[in-house]
Image (cartoon, helix red, strand yellow):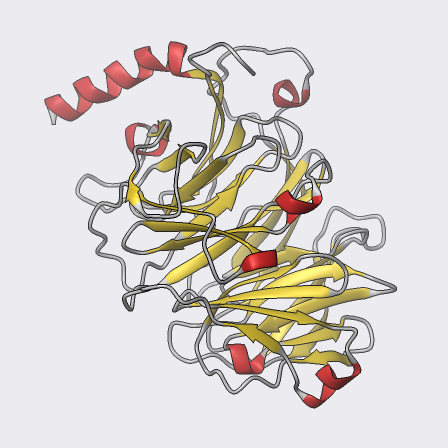
Length: 384
């Protein structure tokens, strides 16, 4: 116990040189979703079964929104802007761009929930409607992605064969996958307003253009990557940045529960661009429940991974090659471990992380003890 306290004290002192900013907040209930709803706001939601769960829209700390660096600020300075309650756990939550709509899903549920952020001028997040979806099996649920074309669209489904794009207001099916592949979907994304991407739990990627007339008959283009995936569970992340070049926008990063990271250019899916074996402590979580990888939107050659333990690992992929080699993180955020309020002996896991949209080296991360952190790690070379 004393050794753990000494290590925590050492980390706190070390934080003065490790971080440019560090903001710590304790949620009433842990979240597994961190979804941007604006330039300065995010949504979080509880995921506990057999109880009502809060959905909150939080305003980021004012100091974090300032242009100049304000220094370390580990204080409870997130502000609740709106809130509501869900009778179901929230495992997936997406904000529909250009609207005030949220869409959520949960395990063993045969419908998506549609919520309104700005209804009747109140500070309530209100349920508006439901969208039928295929019910996932035990431990699975409908994954989500959202886009705005001429109206609000949501891509959803628990398995590759079940994927469809639905217009939120009319509930009309815009696109049906029609694939015979029954693997579980772990990641869904809109690459643009008309192109969708899916990653299966086996690490295979699937692409489709929702404008194709044949897609309504179930003709979906799926691309199987010839990699030795080894039966591990995979997830994926796509770079989202308006400043990115055309090539950067096609970059997809995949992560396995064994710690393998593969970067792929969708214009040449047969060969990975880069690969590496990252630091992956043995996980006791069934099926790598919180596994997550993201590509930095404003930094070149940078990815973040979480879900193995109570840390978030940041990797510089500049020197990686197509052959997987052991890689060491350029930075590890251990703040959840050392600031945890969980009971001694309780396992601590980072449940979600996301990059700040405007600050290149800033990330948000959440853990299963209810902690929510915003942190900007210091560049040892002095670049911001």
